[in-house]
Image (spheres, rainbow, N blue to C red):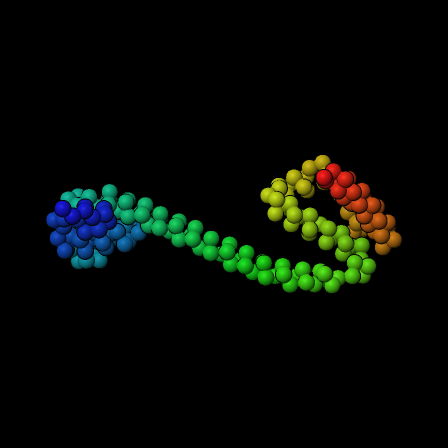
Length: 180
């Protein structure tokens, strides 16, 4: 015995003409109606209605719509995975080049604003890599310590950077001291 066809496929006992009408109805999408099928196929509306009732078009087309939605979601998920893989490969390639440039970077040639920007970027990347909440970093208790240096003079920025450097060295030393 053969398997029963899917609801949206041609059903046993469904004539070619009734199947053609159902397929027309199914393919009209959200604007589908018996009248549109009758007009499109140049059939009597009453005949199309009989076919619709006899072959359960409404139930079948609901199954079709669910299947199309399932297929669409699966395709979108696969596309998202493909994009993520492609972006990861691109990021990895770019990181290799950036690392090579960073290794040649002379820190003494960076302005205080450059150092602050590098610090912000690297902290953000590290937090993202560990899955930490970035909103917490910009709204939590530590964010209250943040200082806007855009209005400071170069001398004031250098002093602030020196203060931040000492704090970082102190924190790094404390972390290194905790390591076995």
